[in-house]
Image (cartoon, rainbow, N blue to C red; front, side, top):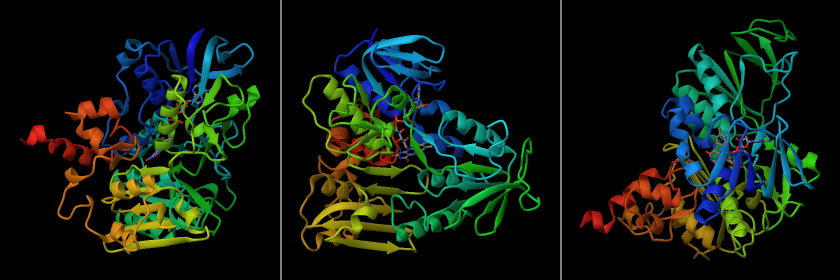
Length: 483
Ligand SMILES: Cc1cc2nc3c(=O)[nH]c(=O)nc-3n(C[C@H](O)[C@H](O)[C@H](O)COP(=O)(O)OP(=O)(O)OC[C@H]3O[C@@H](n4cnc5c(N)ncnc54)[C@H](O)[C@@H]3O)c2cc1C
C-alpha cells in the first residue's frame, strides 16, 4: 500500500508532488502512461519549432524522484479504480493500494467529425496528426521533414502554437476554424483579427467560419475518401466547398477532460470529475486536480489554474484549512512571436449587465488590449501582441482594486509597465505578478540570488517561459549585484 497515489504524471501531478515533498510527505507514487518523466507540455510547440530539444522539457531530473521518496512509474496506465478496496488496477492486472488517491489525468483531444480521417482499422490516416504528447510531437516532427503544406484544424490555443511552429519550419500553413475568429473561446473578434494578421505575416492563411468535413485524395472525385494506406498529399474539404490540398493535417480542435476511470468507478462526473472546495471527489479519499477536474461547474484547461489546484491540494493534504473558491483564470499562450494573455472570461464578462469595456487596438503594431470593468473593478482582460502591462493589470485584477475613472485608460495607454514613469521592470512593486503561470510576484524573485534558485524555489519560468526576460532583469537589478 502506498500513501498517496497520483494517477497521471503531467503538469498538475508533478506540482502536487513537489509541494507534498516540501511539506515532508514521503511514500508518494506517480503513475503515468506516457513513457517519459513529467515534462512541460506547453513547450511542445517549441520542440516542433526547433528552438528546444525534447530533453529540455523535462521538469525534474531523473534522479529527483527517488531522492525525494517519489516512486515514478512511467509507461504505467491505470485501467480501473476499486474504491472499496482502495486500489488502482493497472493494465497488466497489478493492483496498487492507496490511502489517498489523486486523479490528474488531464484531457484528451476530441476528434472532429471529418470523413475519411479514421481508417477501417480505427487508426488515423497517416497524414493526420494529433498534438498533445511528446510522442505526437515526435511523429509530427518526422512528418514535417517530407512536407511542404499543412492544414491545422482548430484556431484555438493549440492551433495557433502549431501553425506558428510549422510556418517557422518553412511549411505553407492554413488554419481552419469553425468559429468566426481565432481563439474565440478566450478573446473577442478584435483580438482574433490581430492574431490572424500576425499569422498572415508569417505566410499563414486563416479560414474562419468554416468546418473541415472530409479528407480526400488531392485530385480525387468528390466523395473519394482516402480509405487506407494513402500516404502523401491529401485534400481537406471544407463545408464551404473549398478543398485545401495538403501533406499534413494537424487536429487541434478541442479536448475534453479524461474522466473514463472516474466514471467507470462510479465517481460523480459531469463534464469533468466533480470536486468540492477541498478538491475531493464524491469519494472522500479520492481527489482530482487539473484539466480533468470540474469545480463549481467549471473546467480549467490551462496550466496556471492546474498548478493553483495542485498547491491547494498539497496544503489540504498537509492538514491546512484551505478552501478552493474557483481558480483565478489567467492564461498565457506560449508561442514565439504570438503574445497572448487572458485574465478571467472576457467574452462572458462583457455581456453581463453593468460591464464596461475599455479597449485599444493598434493594427499597425499588431496589438490589442481590452479590460472589462464592472463597478470600477477589472473583472477580465485580454492582451494580444503587447504584454508589457500584464503584470500590473493582473495585480489589479487579483486584488479587485477599485479604479478611478481614468485608471482603466492609463492601464492600457499609460507609461509601459512598471507603473513609475521612466522606470524599468526592476521598479515593479514586490506584489506585482511576474510569472502568470506559477503566480510568482516580483518580491519572490528578488529574494532569490540566481535563476536556478528562482526555478527551484518558485517554479517561475517553468510554465510558458514568457516571464524569463523579466525575471532576469529583476535578478540583475538586485542591490547586492548592482552595488
Ligand atoms: C500542446 C499543448 C500546449 C499547451 N499550451 C498551453 C499554454 O501555452 N498555456 C497554458 O496555460 N496551457 C497550455 N496547455 C494546457 C496545459 O498543458 C494543461 O492545462 C496542463 O498540462 C494541465 O495539467 P494536467 O496535469 O491536468 O494534465 P496533463 O499535463 O495533460 O497530464 C495528464 C497526464 O495524465 C496521463 N494519463 C491520463 N490517463 C491516465 C491513466 N489512466 N493512467 C496513467 N496516466 C494517465 C496523460 O497521458 C498525461 O500524461 C497546452 C496543452 C497542450 C497539449
